[in-house]
Length: 339
Image 1: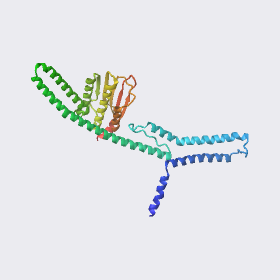
Image 2: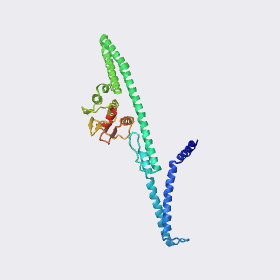
Image 3: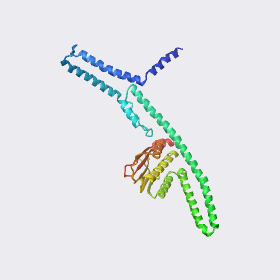
Image 4: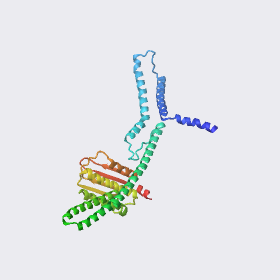
């Protein structure tokens, strides 16, 4: 019973030490210190003040009051400076840009406030990463399901229709063959489009042949579909990468090329995947119109994917100078992840 009685005062004391109460006592102590020092200075100085203040005494009082107010303002400003830095961090914080924290330069209650805010950011980033990972995994799973259905069901149905049309063309009268051949070409084109959509949804070449071959196939398909020349540079020897990192690199390259096709009006694109300065760097640059000001769902998704693997994604798009997408993956961090 005695232990429970001792615990209750401690819990009540912790509840009473709220940040607002601690800040109140901080300001009270500063003001009390300033006024105490001012009183001691007046008491120990030879200056005197009459019961009826004389004009000659007004400058002394004015100077003393000014010094007290100035000292109080300087102490308060220095004491509350971490709050300005905390407000600035709140305004610029982005959960997709990890590591932006405030240095614990405060004292007492402000130090506790800054530490609590940094811990909140850590928790939010962790929860955001976990939820993004689940969402992207579900998205990839749904893409694979749709790709299988397109390939196995619709693709097979179109193949059967194409073979049936071929048999009909062989037995049809001469006056109907031209129309049947046109229908046959339409079905063949639809089958090719279905296969292309299935490949975009599920990069089978990435699973079967690796990242270099997947980027090569992606570049060739982009150039043929959009009539845009593309230069590709991929180092022949890349560090060991996990499946997740390879998929992120492929998807960001794919989304970058998609944005070029939709918005850039470019004539030439450069895609590179190189190793340098301890990093694996993916770059997709174009000579289009640039000037991308707003981040849509595609760029936001690219940032989320980069954040999941601890990479840095930067997008430079000055007006009239094209767009430069750069993904930087620390090799050491990736090696520790693949172990």
